[in-house]
Image (cartoon, rainbow, N blue to C red; front, side, top):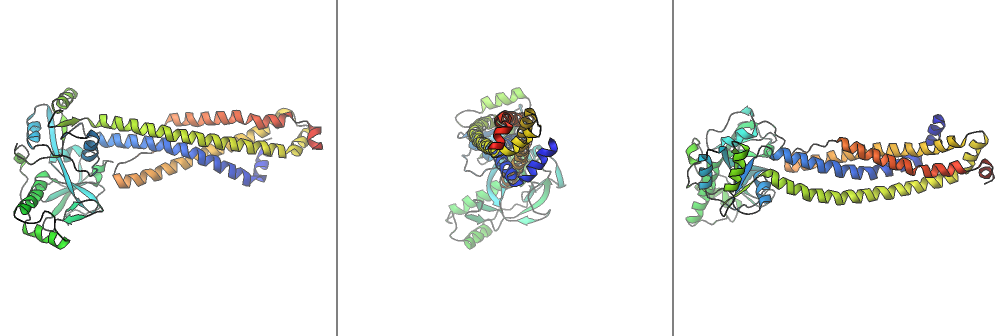
Length: 420
């Protein structure tokens, strides 16, 4: 019987291939939605794992986390520098590090911070920590060599930008891969960022135009008013209550209880304290709603494809009445005829499900790679045990539906089939 089924499938290989491909594409759509949503959840959760508490100025919690944790460029309001001084002096804080941004090199964000955050992100695989204001530590995905010197740009990524021609940083260290957007970051001392942008304000205050009229004007202005970055880092500058304003501060509490107390104390008129996990949970809820909508569309598409395939199989069985009648005339029992038709449909269904799972996985990996290149977040595409249960359920429903054409073959009499 199985040799007969294999021979029959080979004889109609074009139709078998077409049905299997259509079924595989329908299944792949649902698999891509499931795997990609899971990858976004896992990747974003891992990216935020190193950030227990983020403090910023009152505003959007979501934007604060997207900017401070995922390094998405956006204009954030500034809070007073005294907030950082207060956190550094708070006994409930293990460490606190400022996060200042606005400059870029190529397509990589330059983040002003302190050694505490560098240590919190992981170990160095090359070089050493920054000791002077003009030194930088880069993430694992920044394609710049150790010792390379670069000029920062102020503006938008892939948009209008001003080159700080008179200011340069030298790369002295490289972080180990973290699978987060910080792999694409260039970390410099926050005091250097203050000095660079403080000099720009001073230049504007002395009659210079706030924005240069041309790139050459920008180079000239920064040559004339370039700050001296060849100075040692001063840890006491971070604890100065009169320090410049900051868009965000990353806080590492000593205990879980301290984390909740700090969050309570720094949620007020002047500051906003946020657990990244809380914001991600809300984003997951929104993402989950969108996934359900797309999943319903995928289920509907799979149902329509299944119905169309079932109709094709029924027509195919009706067209094979003479063949089925010949089998019965040569002594094949009804159950054998039923099993042949049923198993052929199951073979098509199983091949379509396996091919769809493979295509969906490959498509999800391709989407994840594209998103990883743009965001720097590692998006793991993995199957879960529940996915096997869903595929098994689809196979079971298909096996039940396959009994319809098999029953049509079962009920045919040899004489009527041969006369037709």
